[in-house]
Amino acid sequence: TRKVQNVAELEIDDKNGLVNPVFDERTCFSRFQSNLYRKISPQKPSPYLISKLRSYEDLHKYCGPHTESYNRTLKRLDSKNITSTNCKYIVWIPANGLGNRIISIASSFLYALLTNRVLLINHGTDMDDLFCEPFPNTSWLLPKDFPLKNQFASSKLRYAHSLGSLLKSSATINNSKELKSPSFLYLNLGHGDYDLDQAFYCNQTQQALQKIPWLFLLSDQYFAPSFFLDPPFKQEASKLFPEKETVFNHLGNYLFNPSNQAWGLITRFYQAYLAKADEKIGLQIRVFNVNATPFERVMDQILSCTMQEKLLPEVDTKKESLPSPSKNPILKAILITSLYPEFYENISNMYWTRPTVNGEVIEVYQPSHEEYQHFGDNMHNMKAWAEIYLLSLSDVLVISSWSTFGYVAQGLGGAKAWILSKPGHRNPPCQRAISMEPCFHFPPRYNCSSKNKIDSGDLAPYLRHCEDRRGGIKLV
Ligand code: GDP
Image (cartoon, rainbow, N blue to C red; front, side):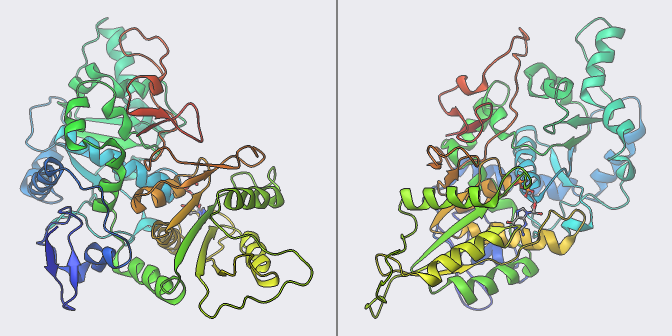
């Protein structure tokens, strides 16, 4: 690991070579300071990944917004005849909450690395200033004056120019599988609109996509595992990531550095409440259907999990329990993240009104309780991002099933969490993750040539069904 000296003369770390030392650390303190809060990951990125990132950075600088090459490729946007361009782009379009967005950006970036495309992010003001620019001397933000920007959400653009309709029309017009190449194409890879655009995952489609300068991609999924399934990417993806479980950990820590504003929220909270604890336990409590899920049931489950796995100490329920005699008791901090205040109230009350059986002192904190998911609200997303990052600094992490918010915390932290079972499934109340990767909830379901149904979880030894969704797959 190379060390870099920052303004404050602190010894700072370049994340095992992931960070390009040309960055000025003042523009993004978190990029160089995360190791002050998190142990350096034992999983080193491969030298091949590092060199690929450096050449990607050069490509991005060459093709980035408002460069000559960008302007030239932009002119092709309304041309009918495609001539080859030096720069090709993948424009990412947001869907759903922050966790979904982060895992889908990471997957899109892996796709960009594998196809020598440049990743541009199109987001609204609700995602402003959450992350630092990840690539030096350029920007990954799609310029505000991009011609089709206002139409990304329109169903005309989404479906009339989608991969699925292109496949359909070329099949009927030419009666052949050969695709004509438009100048841009929309890829609908969200969990809801799957069927036709699923062909994205097929080798033959990828060959056709190579010629198209502009791809617009909308997805809320962690589709990175699909590149490890079949040619054309399997070999290159495995060379970049010999340890497949580290894909999100490395790409996530490379791409998603909290902006100085977000870093302020993270470090102030950490220093005020978590820094002095001997152990930090993160509890991410996501309740998807509040009406159908009584909080007591969720609470029961959290306690059965944390007691059974000995993650938290039991409390002494005897009537006359004595105060703990120890002068220097072990101090454990529980960081709760949830949209609701009830779990915090319940747990902090439990540890306030009763002593722990082993004398440990438990403090309980929850940074916010936003009540519901706010759409289009920048500060709401800023808090969500700060909380995801704080969770990722925990020594022990418990996350909710199905929640991408928890997946991101686990993946950035680089350790296997305990995943709570769905509320009501008491046996077991939680299980240890088989890998720290996020789950790809809706993987490809059909074989590209035979069109028969497949089970992606059976296709390679390094792909398994997710703990919290049998139909999903994850890299292990
Ligand atoms: P998922 O729906 O659990 O997969 O996670 P997402 O992050 O994609 O979407 C949930 C959104 O709800 C988050 O991005 C936040 O906006 C909000 N949210 C859910 N749980 C929390 C929480 O514990 N803290 C905060 N601050 N926001 C949350």
